[in-house]
Amino acid sequence: MNPKLINVLKRNAVGYLFLSPWLLGLIGLSALPILASLYFSFTRYDMLTAPDWIGLDNYREMLLNDQKWRNSLKVTLIYVLLGVPLQLVFALSIALMLNRGIRGLRIYRAIYYVPSLFGGSVAVALLWRQLFGGEGLVNLLLRQIGLPGHNWIASPDTALYTLIVLKIWQFGAPMVIFLAALKQVPTELYEASRIDGAGRWKQFWRITLPLITPIVFFNVVMQTIQAFQAFTPAYIVSRGTGGPLDSTLFYTLYLYQKGFTHFQMGYAASMAWVLLIVIAFVTAMLFLSARKWVYYQE
Image (tube, rainbow, N blue to C red; front, side):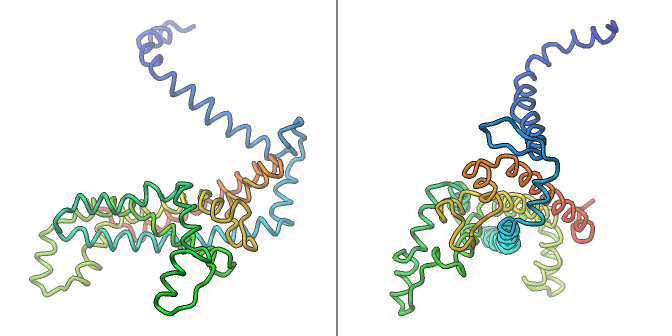
């Protein structure tokens, strides 16, 4: 072995020793499972027998013949396209309100952040199912003001929108990030604009929004990726079925059904890789579009 290489290894031995737990975790818990799932995606594998190599058959079946797969992709896209923008608009609105120097800002910030801590939990999903059920609190309030109730969860026309409302309710994390960005906008710009006669609305569109576009972009990317991976709300609210009539059949829920209910692990692996490609494509498009609307200060 090269003497110089040996000397380098000796000098860095302690560093490699401390780094080894992370390297073992990366290889054993991330890299190898990823490579294994790629291999399984080209096989017929039920976790009970040895994988049977079938090439691209899983992908062909998924893209050409699986109507339920297409519906799960459609449901997920609706969830992403409606839930993410509405959540970020609501988060930015709350951040603008909290940025006005009100008393007890830290308390309000903590209170508004709480939904993001519990929003993806099983307990909150169960609570959501009760709130929007036939005898839930939402219908009780509607009846109090003379409006007819509705079983929001059991209706295919409204079930998905209850999950979108839950997504919007999880606005705490992007709200805190927006609030930090608003604190960085120079106050002298607002003072100069007021002298020129600009109102709050014009200040928002001409000063605030352009200067926080990098943070808007960051939140859009992060929340979009999270929305594509949403699983727990749909699983709990629909009791794992994706119903009614597959109206809440998220992509990840259908993937779970294929892999762990029907034991078609090879097919589920191919679905996972298609999801990865979709998320990568959407993220790449967001980065390309950022050149036209994201403003970075010198």
